[in-house]
Structures are given as structure tokens and as C-alpha cells.
Image (cartoon, rainbow, N blue to C red):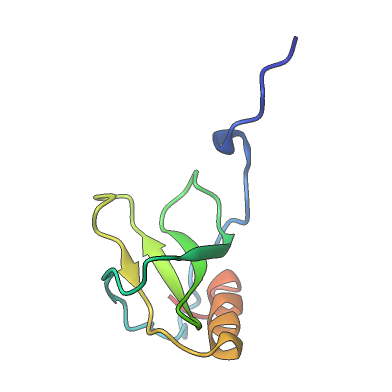
Length: 97
């Protein structure tokens, strides 16, 4: 009998090292601004930094986990969906960090 899949068995997207000309994201300490938060996409948990594309209260943002301290989560600015998806694409392409 096989064991059930675990979220640790899933390897998601791996973020490449940022390019030399990568846009610097203004990361700030995460604050609880909404009761409900939905993670739309995430990168692999096997490497840091790990990122999540999130939505809450009608706005979108990216969360960054450095692995140093799980309680020290950072967030991008909260923004419209189109801008957040563009930032997400830039992070995944190594064009933003």
C-alpha cells in the first residue's frame, strides 16, 4: 500500500538567481491586513527564498520567505491583480528580487 502524497513531496517552480539588472522589490514586514488570504501560486519549498502569489481583500501581493525565521515573512506592496501577476512573472524569470 502506498502512502498518501505530502506537500513535501511536491516540487514546484524553482526561482532562478536574479539577473544583474533585476528590479529591486520594496519588501516590507508582513502585517495581518485581512482575515482571509488565498495563495494562488507558490514556488518550491526546497529552496529559499520561497515566494507565494497571494490575494486578500480584493488586492494581490507576493510574500517572500527567506528561511531564516518563519515568523519573518516579507510582502510586496498590495496591488491590482495585473500588476501582481507581472511582478510574479518577473520574480520567476529572475528579473525582480
